[in-house]
Image (cartoon, rainbow, N blue to C red; front, side, top):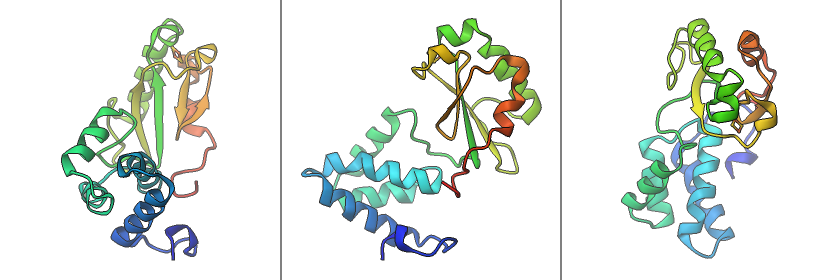
Length: 172
Ligand code: FES
């Protein structure tokens, strides 16, 4: 049974779920290297981050060197190797958004959540991250909540990001 076929709320069986996703990715792509990214995306979408054990599983089930898996994960900034909150907020800090107030927006979020950029609230509700241009400059200051675009979010409207109705990882 694939992880997707399990009844909602069934606790993950980490290793067998990873094995199933790796097998599915391998079946879709002719080379193991090509299957790595889809596998990592699927794992992170469900688990919120890439545990060291998930990287071990990628190497084992896709038959790739562990070092290669690590190099791919460290290259792409959207891959997370630390636990994330139920809602991950990305605030764009590139030029258009900086001119529209993204620094002040980040400051307001940090003050309200009691965390700094790169951290997760102690209750696991929010992770706050900076992002480079999100290719949504017309929404400056542009943000994403669980990768869903939100904007423009002027600094004083930071609460919008906390109240944004997006599916949590668990609901997605
Ligand atoms: S500069 Fe922020 S989305 Fe492009």
